[in-house]
Length: 488
Image (cartoon, rainbow, N blue to C red):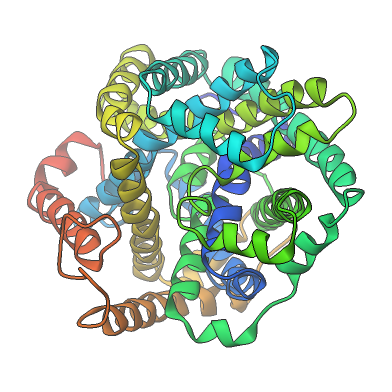
C-alpha cells in the first residue's frame, strides 16, 4: 500500500483547509453569474435542495473513501472496485484537472486585479468603464502571464506539503476573505438601491422552476462550488486524522460554502442595482450574456469600491483576499493531481513539476480564448454531475448499509442515519432524470444542439465526455497496474 504519514495538525485547520478548497472564485465569480443567467432568486431553491440531496452526501462519501484507502482518486476507485472501475476514478480525476486548466486563468485574473487595485486603477468608475477594463485585459497577452503566475504559486505551495504549505496558506486565506465580504456587504447595504439587489436574489419567480436549465445549473453549481464529486475532499481525507468527525465536517463545509456564496451574491447584486441607475437597467444588464458571464464580478466590484470612502484600501485588500480564495482552491486541484502521481510511484517534487507544467500548457487555450474558456467551464462543470454519479456507484458497490456503518460512522461521535443511504441510492435517479430532461428539451428544440463545436451545445458536452470515457475505459487494465494494489 502506498500510504502517507502526513496528517493535518488539528480539526480546525482541517476544516479551514476544506473551506479553502470549497470557497473560492466559484462563490464570488461563478455563483453570481449563474444566478443572473438563471433568472435570479428561483435558482436558490434547487441549489439548496441539491446541497442536501447531492453535495453533502457526496462529501461524506469522499471523506470515508479517502480515510479508508489513504490513496488518491484513481487508486481509491481501483482499490474499492478490485480494478473493475478504475476508469471511473480516472474520469473523476480528468474532469477535475480539466477544470484546473481554466481555473488557473481565473486565479490569474484575481492576481491581476490585485495589482491593478494596488496601482490605483480603480478610481472613479461606472459599469461601462469597468467592463472595458476587463474586456481589454482578457483579450491581451497578460492573461497568459498571470495564468503562469497562478499555476506557479500553487505548485510551490503544494511542493511544501500538507503542513508546511497547504495548512499555513489556508489559515490566512479563508478568514481574510470572510472578513472582507462582510465589510463590503455592510457598505453595499447603505447604497441607494442596494437592497433592491437583495430582493432580486431572495425573491423567487416560481414559474422559472419549470425550466430544466435552472435545475441543471443548480446541480452543477452546487457540485462545482462545494467540491462534491471532484475528488478534492477524498484527496484531503487521505491526510485526515483517524477520528475526525466526517458527518459534522461535511455539514460545516457545505453550509460554510453556501454562506460565502450568498454573501458574495448580495454584494454583487446589491452593487449592480445600486449603480445601474434603475431596476430596469440592472435587470437588462444581468440579462445580457456578456454581462452575466465571466466578467460580472470583475466589472461590478471595482464600481462598488469607487463608492466607498477609503475605497482604494478596500479594493487592494479585497482583491488580495479574492486571490487568496482562488489560490486555496487552485492548490487543492494541484494536490489532487500530485496525489494521483504519488500513488503511481512519483516523488512529490517530480509529481508537482509534472502537474504544474501540464496545467500551464493545457491551460493556455483557455487563457488565450474566452470562447474556449467558456466552453470548458460548461462541459466540465456539468461533468461533475457524472463524477458524482460514479461516486454513488462505488458506494452502492460496497453496499450502502455497510458503507454507512463501517466507513462513515466508525470512530466518530456524530453519526449519520439512513438518510445518507437514501440520498446515495437516489443520486443515480437524480442523474438519469436530469439528463433525460435535458436531452428531451435540447434535441430538436435548441439551436445548434447537434454541433459538437458550438460553445454551449448539448453535443459538445456529449462529444467531449464520450471521447474521454472511451479512452479511459479502454485503458482500464493499464490504469490498474499503475495505481497500486486492490482490495483483497
